[in-house]
Image (cartoon, rainbow, N blue to C red; front, side, top):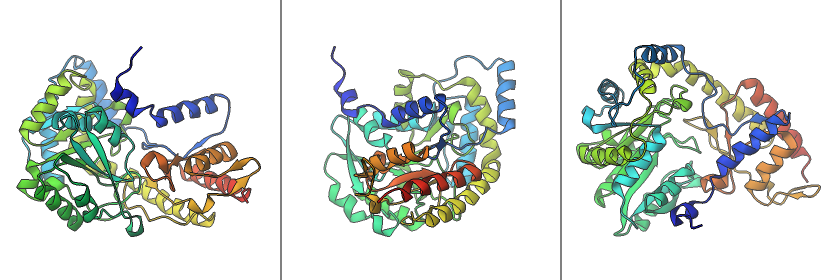
Length: 396
């Protein structure tokens, strides 16, 4: 049996295997504290659930236009104008089954085989393989770890060739929690325009900020807007990860091409989810305020907790709900037959010794780090810190 080379090049998704392992542990009775969660641990607001119920009762249970209901796209246009200062028409919006699909749509619409995409690392682990599946070549560009994971323009410039087609920006940033300033966004956009590159701007953590505002590249000027596909969704801001709803906004020609690709893969996103999402989009960021306040409290709590147990080499996250400490000082330490040789082994040691799951930085192309999510209760975060401390105390 011959499997597609594109699939073989991507390999198995390690996070999918990790989810399976965690599920087996929980089913066997292990009291597992999950600190690797990539979604809000909140339930979807009641008014959104009620809107979905009313939509089903009203008969919105059939196919929708591939691009999504017009009323939802109009609401997205209003949101982008009000909150992001970007003007779009409904035909420049494509609703998809999650922001992940929106990114994939953009890559398939833009890339020819062999086209290169610049990806700052650390990064969300899906980006490089999504590029590969679309026939492109991911070009990984290291962020400046010594300067709060700042993008270094010279590093990007050095990697640009006649095959470079696009750059992927993620702001607020997963896994580091970094939020880019307006000045930095302008510089990156200027570089992209100088070389005729497209920008795929992943803004899925938009509302999860702890001071300051988000700057969308498409809001910089009209030239940048013509070269930018803005990606967003409702998963993180409205605790709707399971509903699978995202959207892209961009130049009509690109959105049309993305629509064509989507029409041959998934067609439309869920009709019921679209109707519920319309209510969420209209509610706007005020709906996420309570959740953001809780995340802000947890953020301070986990930073204090990590410092108290000796994990203190990290930057204060400015957005999202992750903290990304460097654990290099534990490399070479041992516990009985276990020698910590890298972040993967460190995470496995913490899982097996403390029953706490965290994510290895190798998933994000930063092998000396771990990503710890504070999408959990203060009680569980406190318990996790105590368990991790006990495990670390056993190392020599």
